[in-house]
Image (tube, rainbow, N blue to C red; front, side, top):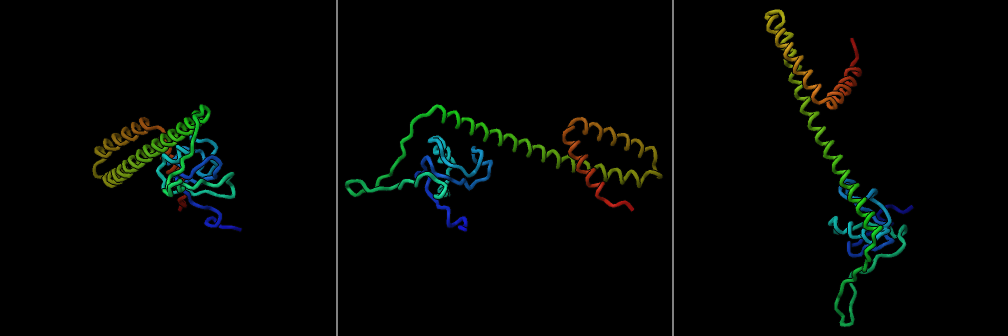
Length: 188
């Protein structure tokens, strides 16, 4: 069986053409396509791939319908000239490209929401640990100053209830995480 390096080759972006089976060696959030490996079916996909700024692109000759064109040929005078692929405007291809761009934007928005949620979770966990330290101090001072501890405990409960109501999605997430942690601790 052929390994990846034996069956795949690299080309420059100028060598892309319809019919090549390409592999975009990028994270899925860095391109607008549904898959990182696919056969180029439309000329606008070529333009999109070129806009990614890759210096070289991996492709699989065995899965391709054609070979990539040479990018440099000698003209009649013996000078090197570039070969450009001529593409026509295709409304269906443009619509497909717009769908891919929209899908890419949806991915970016999802990632932004997830990052924001992770930041909120970290902030809530820091506050939770601060409340645990305050609770420990209250427990230590319970018999020496019960009135003050009662007031502090009331404030703490109101603060915790208010934050749980403000960020309900985060609170549920944290409660589930802590429930899992608590259930995994053996009781003695």
